[in-house]
Image (cartoon, rainbow, N blue to C red; front, side, top):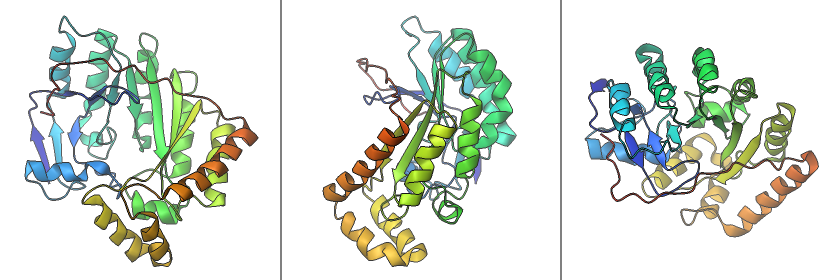
Length: 290
């Protein structure tokens, strides 16, 4: 189900400043379909069942954004576009909300952080290139595995890992930062020596500015759902995987074990670029999602 809605608010403030304190989500729900997505639970508050198929389209997003940015107290803080759902998910092909959003961003010279798992962003390459001349633009993607047999299960609607890193590399010299998120790292599935080596080596070869890493986090209803996906699709690792996630976070000893391997790869390839997050700014009230 795809439903068009009119939003009352489109900017959302949160205390977590990495990579920004402000999010802008043109859509609710996401056709990229990442099985580990933390935002799946939010749909039940809307009376919707399927986060990956029930998509709400904020057709007035650019108009509302302009109203919110022209406020006298707006400080041109960085906005992350697509903080909860992918801004370039499949319905963007039809609705083309992003070019209109970029027009507003350009008008108010507001810095942006763009993160997507889709090469559809290249449709707007020239627009983003022009925008980068008047304000700060950071472009990011995240990759969990370069193994397509794994990717098709856990991220069925995403571009391939290689396509994503090639896309990201095209923004080198245009974006202030190109950021590759090796995330989520899924134990026993995406942390093989081969996948670790491929991820860090390609980051170096494609001259990406920064690689940041984060392990899978399984909170609330997401944990049994994801465990079922592992059991159904990767039964050979299910027992050991379950033992690593007795709690919502990964076993600490295993965390240290994989981190040591990644640190050695950073040293080997001299990958020490960092992304400077904005400092959080106190706000009295958090803006609602609508």
